[in-house]
Structure formats: C-alpha cells, structure tokens
Length: 494
Ligand SMILES: Cc1cc2nc3c(=O)[nH]c(=O)nc-3n(C[C@H](O)[C@H](O)[C@H](O)COP(=O)(O)OP(=O)(O)OC[C@H]3O[C@@H](n4cnc5c(N)ncnc54)[C@H](O)[C@@H]3O)c2cc1C
Image 1 (cartoon, rainbow, N blue to C red):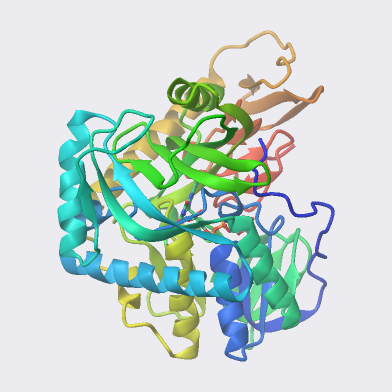
Image 2 (cartoon, rainbow, N blue to C red):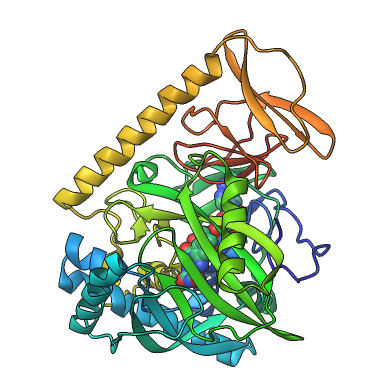
C-alpha cells in the first residue's frame, strides 16, 4: 500500500548516527512534530540533532490526509463535554497557533496550499443532533462556523457545520521543506537509527541508546507518535487508531470542500491537485490497531462506498496510517515525568496532528527556550485526571487485558498441521509453549516470535498491509519481524 504523497526520490537516504556524538537537544522522530521542534530550536541557536528510526515521512505525517483545519469532525464537542468550554477555547488557541505557523511556513517555503472550507457532515439523520451541537459549541468557543441545512454532495448527507478558509496540502512536501531547511542550517537528521532506550550519564547528560551507536544528550524530545519510553505510562493513556485512505481518478464533478462525517464509519474527503485534473482522496474505516478481523475488507469497503456515490471513481492508490487518541481528549506536550524537564514528549493528536503537532512543537521549543506560549498548559502531560478520563483509562486498559489474554489463549490453542500460509497470509500457532507468527509474503515464508516485545501482547496478522500488529498498544512489525511503528523499539524475535 503506497501513498500518493511519497513522490520524493526513495533512493536518497540519509546516513545513520555515527558514534561519539553529544548534543544539547536530541529530537527522536522526523515527523512533523520532530522536524518543527528541531527547526524552532535551531532558530533559537540551540545545538540540536534529529534521529529517525526509519525514513523522513514514513510515519503518520507523510501518510495523512493533509487537512489543516480548526474544525475537526466533532472533537470540539467532545473536548467541551469531557473537559470544559475554557479548555476547548485554549485548545483552539493552540491549534490556531499551529495552523498559522504551518501556513506561514508553507507560504514562505513555496509549499503549495489550497484554501478550502472544512465541513463536518451527518451521514444519517440520526447524526443531525451531533452536527447542530458541534455548530453551537464551536460558535461558543469563538470559531465562525455556520450550520448548513442542506449540502450539495454526491453522497448522502443530512446537514453539516462549515468553517470557511481552512487549508489542505501535501504533508510530504512540508516534511521535505522542513528537512531542507534543517540541512541549510547544518542540523543533522540521521535516518535508520532506532532509539531503544534512554539512561543517565554520570555528568548529568542522558545516554540515548540506539541500534547504531549511543549518543549523549542534555535534553531528549520524544516526537515518536506513541512515546517509546514506558515510564510515565503514556501507553495506558492512549489508544492507537488505524485508518485507511484511497486516492481516485474521477470522471465526474467532485466536491471541492474538505468533508468529514460526524458519524461512523468515518468518511473523510478532499481533492488533490494533479497534472490531469484533480484526484479525490477518501479516508475512513478506522479501528484500534490489531483489533480488526479483516483489514483487506476495510480497504475494499472504502472503494465500494466511493464507487457507489461516484460511479466513475477509479482507485489509483491505497494506504493506511495510525495515530494516538488520548483518553482525556487533550493532547500531551511536555515532561515525560512530573518535575523532570529533560525528557519531553508530544502525542495524542487524535488524527488532527497537522495543527496539534505544530502547536506541540511550539510548546516544547518554548519549554526549552523559556518562551512558553500562553495556551501551552492545555497540553500539559500531568494534569489531575478528570473523572471521565479515569473511566476511559480503565475501560481502555480492560480491553488491553482482554486482548492480552485472548492473544495468549488463541496462540496456545491446539496443534495444527504445519503447512505454509498462502501468499499474503499469516497465522499464529504454538511451538511448544511459544506463540509463533508465520507469514508468507512475496513467496518467502518467515516465522518469528508472536510476542510483542513492548508489553507481551500476541500480534495479529494485518492482511491489507502484510504486517504483524499488536492489539495492546499499537506496535507494528513487518512480516520478517522488524519493527515498523508504535511504542516497541525492538523487532519480534526470530
Ligand atoms: C489516516 C490518517 C489521516 C490523518 N489525516 C490528518 C489530517 O488530514 N490533518 C491532520 O491535522 N492530522 C491528520 N492525521 C494525524 C496526523 O497525521 C498525526 O497526528 C501527525 O502526523 C503526527 O505527527 P508526529 O510527528 O507526532 O508523528 P509521525 O509523523 O508518526 O512521526 C514520528 C516519527 O518517529 C519515528 N520513530 C518512532 N519510534 C522511533 C524510535 N524508537 N527511534 C527513532 N525514531 C522513531 C517514526 O519512524 C516517525 O518517522 C491523520 C492521521 C491518520 C492516521
């Protein structure tokens, strides 16, 4: 599954981390959060370096839908309900700052942006109340939204909330511009360097352990999506949500605005400028990572839906990505542990990271330089948990426990004939007492331990992406066991 954004020359790679380095700030992760944080710190004259486990853009940013919007489905209603109207206003201030920074950056670095209205719409009459509620709460929080009773859409719609003058872009183009900017300032970005742990050095530095070399750091910023260090317990305060995107060539008029449905299954649409007209991007069918029965069906369902509403739609690309939803609704940007300022994290953007990720970067850089934005406390990593957050954390962790148990029991079930899985298939079976994951991809059958090295969940086969996905906290691995993403820092054992 390959995105339409990945048009950059794939053969150009950056070197891995060489030994013997020390930097004041080590940013882990070359997604939007990491690169913007590094740039802000470089502009402030700090000694900073970026360390990326794979390649720039292979994380969520480079696979996103590319909407830069303050109207974010029905998030405003959820934040106001679970936190407060004041918290929502401050959240929007943060997102406004993130949006402004990103659009200014694009304007000054020749990154193409299309200004479009954002619309959250009801797919069914039953979601009409959610739309009206989102309209009221966004107005109360100061967004100039309007309620649209009837939308002119080729798909079923029952009204929507509209916010004019939002934006859409190619997220990979943004990352490449940021990387070029860092290059111009001689800020190194090391690729193919996975951070596996952070310890203390006698002189007060951190020792960052990677699969290439160790490096010393004054401050470490984990801009890795899910934080890769378990102290702080953020894995238990997030759920990993995966969803799917398909791009289509369409031979009939397509709506030019950016749409997202309020109700499930989510449908998110936007256009993309292309040489021979515009493409249509359709996203949706999200689920918790590793918990969908058949991911191939979810991709097919998105295509079926699109072809039902636009019969000329011809799919040209499919891909998917994941992001982390915080149980307390508000994202986190700040210290990993209370009272300690030298390991910072940013996560929990709930699929709205193009504004939240930049805002988090502004907050983290401000934390280091002393210029903290007024809205930054809304992203605090250590707030007293609201009652609903305690309940949500408990239910998220009950589900984790159920998947942990079910995984081990099914991994242990009966002896099966030792035949090779068919091409593109994978299965978990018992060898002695150990669950073993075996998959066949491109004619090669590989067996690896089925036990996720993060917190010992038993991985499940993702047929759409030919990967092993952990249903506990969203770690993912290639068919050969090598780590792809999530909180795990090590591969599945051979
Ligand atoms: C399907 C989908 C569509 C989306 N569409 C939108 C949208 O239209 N608008 C919007 O605002 N948001 C959208 N989002 C959300 C947004 O893309 C993310 O919130 C945002 O990109 C996260 O940025 P990041 O820098 O935190 O993470 P990432 O972009 O994932 O970057 C993290 C980087 O850290 C690296 N890394 C991880 N672990 C290690 C390690 N141990 N060592 C070294 N490096 C490591 C990864 O390889 C990765 O490159 C979408 C999300 C999804 C899933």
